[in-house]
Amino acid sequence: MESVQAIKQRFEIIGNDPKLNRAVEKAIQVAPTDISVLVTGESGVGKESIPKIIHALSHRKHGKYIAVNCGAIPEGTIDSELFGHEKGSFTGATNTREGYFEVADGGTIFLDEVGELPLTTQVRLLRVLENGEFIKVGSSQVQKTNVRIVAATNVNMFDAIEKGKFREDLFYRLSTVDIMLPPLRERKDDIHLLFRKFASDFAHKYKMPAIKLDDSAVEILLKYRWSGNIRQLRNVAEQISVLETKREISSQTLLSYLPMENPNLPSVIGTKKSESDFSNEREILYKVLFDMKSDLNDLKKLTMELMQNGSSKVQEANKGLIQKIYGKPEENAIFEEEPRVEMLPNQNNMIQEEFEDDDDDQNYLFAETVDEEETLSLEAKEIELIKKSLERNKGKRKAAADELGISERTLYRKIKQYDL
Ligand SMILES: Nc1ncnc2c1ncn2[C@@H]1O[C@H](COP(=O)(O)OP(=O)(O)OP(=O)(O)O)[C@@H](O)[C@H]1O
Ligand SMILES: [Mg+2]
Image (cartoon, rainbow, N blue to C red):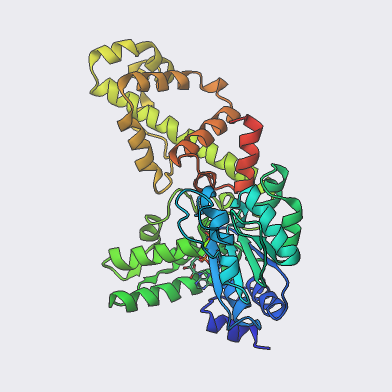
């Protein structure tokens, strides 16, 4: 049996984290069998190399390997893609078509984002898993296939089952062996290693000297949450390699490439028990407090601007409010020494955009809501944050969860809890 190190080298998997090594070892162990495997882990952790290892080390290695992204195929065509269809079975089916399960007979199919499969397709898949049988769309003839299935998901399958979106029997059938890939933030010793590898790759690709992080930048690198995991780390390394003229990278430069996280708040960064509800609650709480602080600061700035430069009409209209928040103009010591608010790298822009979009009426409303600051509960703020993030991400929960720095599971729970 090839060693874990040899396999990592062959599949260009960087890192020495024990959990990563265990995942590779498990893949090597199950490869020669026909056991179905479910690969789990957050987005960007490197799940796609596991089915490749399994296929390459199995007796099916000379057979076909087909990777299917279940989330990317429209619901109306997925059965036909996977199982084929008969000529004339639906409008546009001008020819009989072989599906992946027929084509990959004797090989391996990787079902990526398997949690996205429609329920009707799940029924067909269960049948293949149980006795190797399937039926083409529009046909009545049962066909046989011999395919090894490896599936992957970055969503919590138990949630999907609870919501009736995924069949429990299929889940257990798919996950005879579960291979979990750890998030990057839990692989502290691998982060800088991976960054150096990417820096060197991009130096090669773009024919320039490799970027190098100074000590303070390395510290940030290790503290950051990396919600997009290795994919995000790689993107950051590429952007910096291309856009920065200086090759020695400071923490400040690095920070300007890291969105929506504040590495100075250690609790935002899930160092341990990152999936536990407790740390998720804490994360969202920090974010809420942080956003409130920024909102307040911006409100103060805005009001000050209004008082100094704004039209006298607006000033007059807000006089009472302005005095309530800041006191009478002559007691305005607060303006001299503005509270220092540490901004999240991108937050500055975000807030600016919000104000640019707003018309005066909305700004006025906004000021009013802060008037009731005392009654503005954390919960309401949390709901608002979630709503905004969902809106910004067009309802994509995964993207919203990433942006909020919470797990998708927690987001699901909150959506349910607040009935959003
Ligand atoms: N250990 C690693 N060493 C080097 N590169 C890696 C490693 N793990 C992942 N990568 C790279 O990171 C990127 C993301 O990996 P991959 O596509 O496998 O993520 P994923 O887990 O499938 O994410 P998603 O759930 O979003 O599909 C790829 O470009 C991959 O080559
Ligand atoms: Mg993937």
